Image (cartoon, rainbow, N blue to C red; front, side):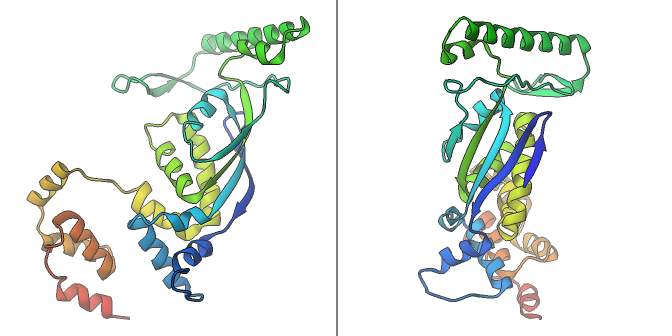
Amino acid sequence: MEIPVLDKGFVRLVDQMGGDQAIVQAARVSYGEGTKTYREDKALIDYLMRNRHTSPFEMVEFKFHVKAPLFVVRQWFRHRTASVNEISGRYSILKEEFYEPKAWRRQAKENKQGSEGGFQDEEAVSLLREAQGTAYRTYQALLEKGVAREMARMVLPLSLYTEFYWKQDLHNLFHFLKLRLDPHAQWEIREYARAIAEIVKAHVPLAWESFEEHVLEGANLSRSELKALRGLLTPELYEKALRELGLSTSRIREALEKVFGTGAGPISRATQRESESP
């Protein structure tokens, strides 16, 4: 499975070990229990995810072959919980392949390290191409003069494409995706994260559903934020809203305890009746 990314890049699944069932088996190993139903497996994975029991997710691994610009890869490699092997500019002559954006972005006014908007500028494109071409011609000239590959590569810009293998367990891959799918992440690396997310979702659909529910689209609240919420809500109102979303009794109990603590009070009879209904 290979997904094109940016103008010349890609993410390709090389190998994968384990799936949703491997997560379930790892979680149940202490009890020696056999195969359960799909519904029970789904509930167990969801319980593990929302309660941050992470080790069963580490039993699943993905190995990717990635082609990306150097500036994307330098951000990517800040995630140090993977095994990685990148093409070597010491052993190989690097290809003349550079990233060229379809549109330019302006420096963000609020976020000093971010960008915003989009605009076209042909002169900027010409400047980029000129810089890339000059750099690569210089690289070639240095090689022709007998300069070592490990030194000649110094002149190449961050828009140069490189390739690498990336192997990571599912728990740490979810952490990578949580950060790199965030709107504050640079657009280019978000595109790679979207491609990886598409592959992961196809291979561990139950784990992905729980990750999306509790982590990717969830949020953590500070003590002050919880205090403010408690001033606006009552346990009864919150329980009613949760019940209308179709959450199970155990999920409702956990949600109430998150906001109001263990002294939130008993679950209402209405919730208990709904949980008992077929």
